[in-house]
Image 1 (cartoon, rainbow, N blue to C red):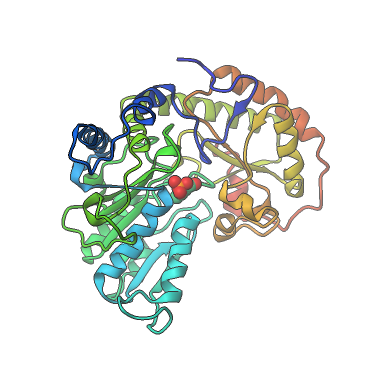
Image 2 (tube, protein in one colour):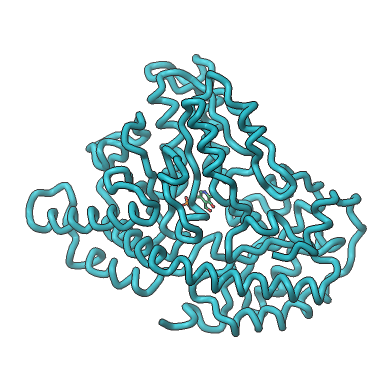
Length: 418
Ligand code: PLP
């Protein structure tokens, strides 16, 4: 396998998206040309497409320990999140109450806003019914949701709890098994947005006891524009897209056959290589963290020091938060692609990260996050090159006014190196 997908560039932004694995592209190839049938057609072309989708369904289900008939293919991770929340609230037949965390991706937060503002009772006009009640659970300075906080929020009106498996900005992994168990004890549905966690850490829907789980192919070296929602058998869900009744009526539209085939192949590869790949990325990440500690006394880590995705390192340089844009541009010029927070937040550049604000950082620090997310084709040489280039890029920054005194736990982060 080639060590680099894109020669001359070092790509460290895998939480935004990942390069397509050449093996995935090979699997998709026939469905982008000769094998063009509509999976709903009964002739040979249609049956071949149907067969390919069902194979992919088995592959995606295997990644998370689900049954194939519990997988609904969607057009994205965002759509899977929308379907999970709107679909369960609609199916409940009442406005209900969604409990989520304050650091979710916009795909969850904006869906919650929609539910709160529009009321979803079938047959009523938007705004005429009271909307869904939304509770945003606070998180610790390391980005963890507490079981105590969840317990307090689990009132009798709660329809569903939705907590992400791993955060896209800081990489913190939530204790999903505990949170879901607690939720189930109250007879409430549990959804997890596993778009960042899928293929990177082991996920088993039965061990985790989740009812719904969202995935996205392009985060695990698959194609863009295809996602999946795991729906435990027996969970009552209403569709949000209406039409020909594909995907058991839960997601009408002619299926994106090549995309789904690519998702299946990507899921199978991720499952096969997960343990080895996680260990490799962890080693790279820890090496970078050690070098940062040795070379930059003013660096600090964002997120949980241990409970974090293997290839994820988010950090800042104390007193240089306002210079972050310059640093990103300097690295980019030198051939290194990293990110400031999430790709989605690029639409709101200059604004502090909502995730960091929710974790207790002040606005100054919440603007100063550099996110390095490693992936399958990164090599030791690329890590070396980054570490060679970084000091020069950082030295061009001028120190600005020191921000307000940081919280204790944040200051301790650099010593608790990952
Ligand atoms: N949820 C999380 C945690 C994400 O990080 C993302 C994408 O960055 C999404 C959902 C949306 O996934 P997609 O890009 O497939 O719509």
